[in-house]
Amino acid sequence: MKCKHFGSCGSCSLYAVDYDAQLAQKKERVAALLAPFYEGELAVFDSPDAHYRARAEFRIWHEGEVCHYAMGNITKNGAVNIEECPKVIEPIQKRMWKLLDAVNASPEVLKKKLFAVEFLATTTNECLVTMLYHRKLDEAWSEAAKKLETQLDCSIMGRSRKQKVVLSREYVTESLHIDGAIYRYVEYESGFTQPNPYVNVKMIEWAIAQVKKVQNGDLLEAYCGLGNFTLPLSRHFDKVLATEISKRSIQAALENCTLNGIDNISFVRLASEELTEALRGDREFNRLKEIDLASYDFSTVLVDPPRAGLDEGTATLIGNMEHIIYISCNPDTLARDLETLTQTHEVVEAAIFDQFPHTDHIESGVFLKRRA
Image 1 (cartoon, helix red, strand yellow):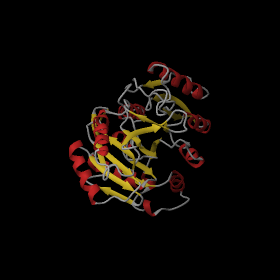
Image 2 (image 1 turned 90 degrees about the vertical axis):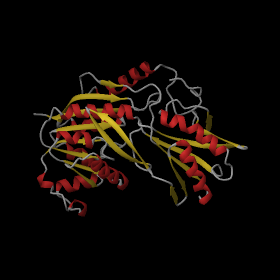
Image 3 (image 1 turned 30 degrees about the vertical axis):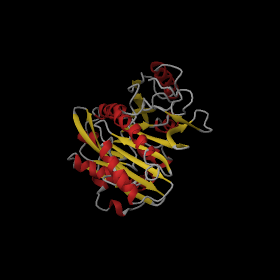
Image 4 (image 1 turned 45 degrees about the vertical axis):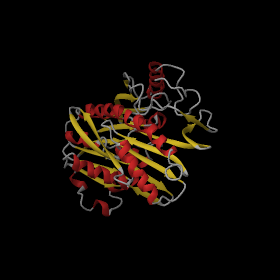
């Protein structure tokens, strides 16, 4: 990928070396962290070099009569106006500049006190645009934004303090081809989604390859989000119990189950700490009153925690499972958690997934099996 803003825009910090060299550096870093726990080869799953990001947020920088897209600068002490962003996927690329032209052409309605624009798009050309303002939005804004929806063939939302204006819908529906099947995912504007759909498919298929080695029992999943891993993995288990703390994510997960005709998953809104309390029998939850926990025979657990990694209770709980799939967005906390998990399990497979090319960030995954 080439970008005229390399070296000034802080969005891409790795720009002085080519993409293959970036991947090699990331592999070396993760391999070093996992070395005390894993002696095998680290699988590497790359990304398209450009047009890979399906979610993006841009500041709006007002200069005189004109506003620009802006990003934080590389020295983290200001912003830089941008004229291109080749990392966003094509459905965003083809709309974002037309949107900016329309905003500049409407100074009293679309432009006034606009301070940011967020894009959420799919590989199938759906796009949701959220425009953020420092003012209350009125009927004039709704009318102008509705026309813009038609012009851009997208959905538009407006947000300001204590106000949300949904003109048509507040979600997109992604379709991904995963392990020989098509899965459809409703993705809401305010919910978490994987930013790189191309690498996301590779992550899910890697996880499927691991569970195919298990071939029995039920799946437990914590931090399930909208069912990103849950739906495709459910084909390989009798039953699935999946938990997530976000109400919006649970709502999307339930919709996605129906959308894909899957009926062996129970989604429950529980924090990871609450899941631990429930499975240990330390506490009863009304949210679990329709679920017979004793009926599950968990053979595998999948966790995809935030950057802070696993809490102590969850790390202890999953140590009782036969198989563990741990997807990590922070290799440092993964290595920390493996100090605990490898007391009872051994790492039999490990991989990295380059969700964020041209940055230092890296996703990784390990598959652990309980020691004999």
